[in-house]
Image (cartoon, rainbow, N blue to C red):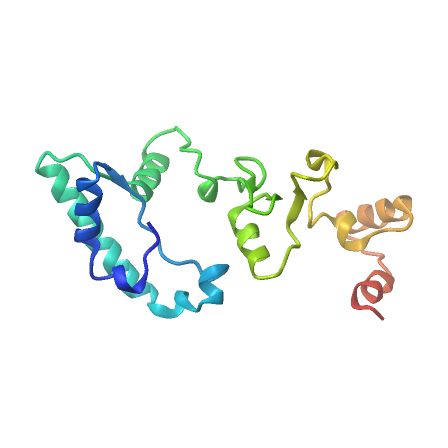
Amino acid sequence: MTTTQASLSQVRAIIDEYLVQEFHEIFLRPLSPYGFALRTKSFAAYDTQRWLEFYREGIEYVIDLNRKGIPFMEHYAALILKKMLTSDDPGYVDLMSPAGIGIGAVLYNYDGDVYASDESRMLAEMGDKSFRIGNVNSRRDISKREAPCSPRRVFRPERPDVFRMRLRAVLRGRPRLSSRPVRRLSGA
């Protein structure tokens, strides 16, 4: 459940409605400052402190329900506790280490575009498709696509042997890069 300004004072009523609908769990989350929320400026409707108050009230209510014998779970708290207190990985991409981008999930957008994370999909909704890894309607095999931020894509070397030599020099701590790649990136 993504929290809007209208729901900030309604956490108990929201959880009660989940129970009426026979749902026994909820995932309380704030608005993210990108994608649709940024376009509509809804992310600025409340600050972090107000959301934390909402979340605390929700968690206290969930604990109270469980003490009364009514099983109910808040997913984010459960994920954090499982990650902290057990050796099991809950598989939640946002909490993976290393980052679960493209490892734990890929996302298919309504237009067929494929992204390695929900954040990259949301950036695309804002017009930045830098992290798009393909489209389901394309004949190109996206599993073999080069990473969007790999050094080869950033420098786009004309001679791979020169690129490898420069990369080795940087890794040895003796950068011998000319300003040529910088000019090419800056358009100079």
